[in-house]
Image (cartoon, rainbow, N blue to C red; front, side, top):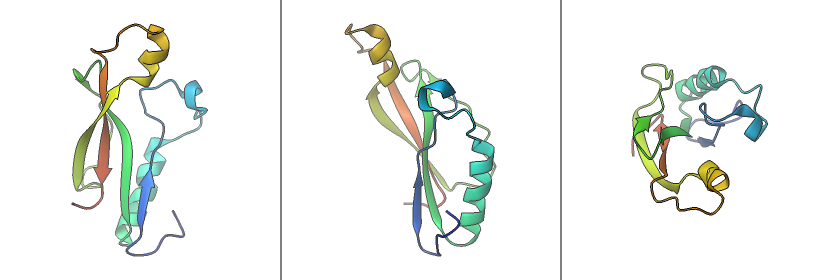
Length: 110
C-alpha cells in the first residue's frame, strides 16, 4: 500500500473481526493499524475498498466495528449467500436461514 500512487485503487479483504483468528491464521492482524494505513492512502489520493464483516445471524445482527469517522465515504452491504462457516458446522443440513452479508467500505463514492 505504501507504493501506491494517486489514482490507484487498492482492495483489502482482511479477516473478519468476529471470526476466530485461528481460522485464517490472522492472530497478529490489527484492524486499527489497517485503518491508519488506509487513511494515509486516502490523503494521497489513493482510493481504497475494504470488504469486512457485515451481518451475521442470518442478517439479523450488524457486526459493530470501530470505524474512524470520516475515513470512508460509502458503505454498501453485499449479500454473500449462505454462511461458509455454518456450512461446515451443519454437515449437509439445510442452510436457508443462514444468510450473511459483507460490508464494502469505500474511501470514494460510486
